[in-house]
Structure formats: structure tokens, C-alpha cells
Image (tube, helix red, strand yellow):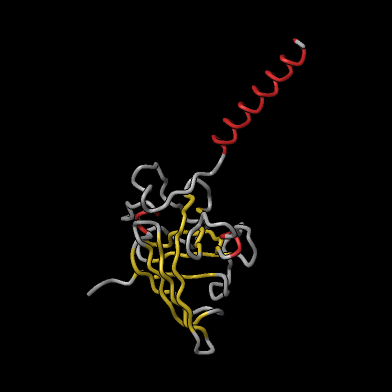
Length: 179
């Protein structure tokens, strides 16, 4: 009986240790609500031809906020995306065939990995089945007024940015300034 108690204690201790370790290793997403409470790093350009403006003092969780125009690509002829401080977005894309679609939902940024990851979820990110309607992407800052988001056709994060900036999975975003 003592051997059984010891074994039960040992297994419980191992499960506890693994749970604590998994929590430390786990990537912690941040959204607009958490942005000011968490330490985030400035996004560094991923390639030599991408230059972060020297005057950029904001981290990506703040820089992303606002209305961004989507440059034409092989998917859409025009569009915009608005990122709000509360971790929500609204995106409109007009397709080359003349049709268009508006999507709304939540977004999550993972600024503790390189390249920075972004989940653009249709509706709520934590809904059951959300992985089927979420765009998994990577994001980088080109300047204070330009971002690049590269998504994948499957449920994995891309490992690198595409050289083809007109690729249907690449969005080049330019901030829309109010006059």
C-alpha cells in the first residue's frame, strides 16, 4: 500500500511540474485590452529591404490601431481593415469580380515571438471551431504608416513573408489619415 501511495504522490508531482512548465512556455496572446499591461518588444524588420522608421516609438500593439487601406493584391482590388483598442477589427475586401465581403471579429497579437503572429478571427477567437474561420498570420512593421500581414491557406502560421507582395495571402496596409 505504501508503494501505491508513493507512486500516486510521484505521478501527481510530475503532473504539477509539467503543468507549471507548460504555462511558462505557452505563448500568451495579447489583445488591445491587455496591450498596456504586458511588456512587448518593438517589431524588427525581417529583411534588409524593410526599414522601421527611426521615429517609431510605439510597439505594434499600439501602432496597429486605426483604419488601414489594403493595397490591391491577387485576392482583392481594394479594401480596408480597422483595428480597435478593444481587440476587435472590421475588414472589407472588394474582389476583382466586383463582389465584396465585410468581416468582423477579434484579433490577437503574439508579440513575444519572431516574426510577430496575428490571429484574425471571424467573431470570437475563443469560440468552439474558431480555428476553422481564423486567418493565422505573421505581421511586420514596414514604417509607422505601413504594415505587412502574411496569412496562410491552412491553419498554420507562415514561417516567412512572401517575396510576391501581390500574393493573395499578403496584405500591405497603409494607414488612412484623417484630414
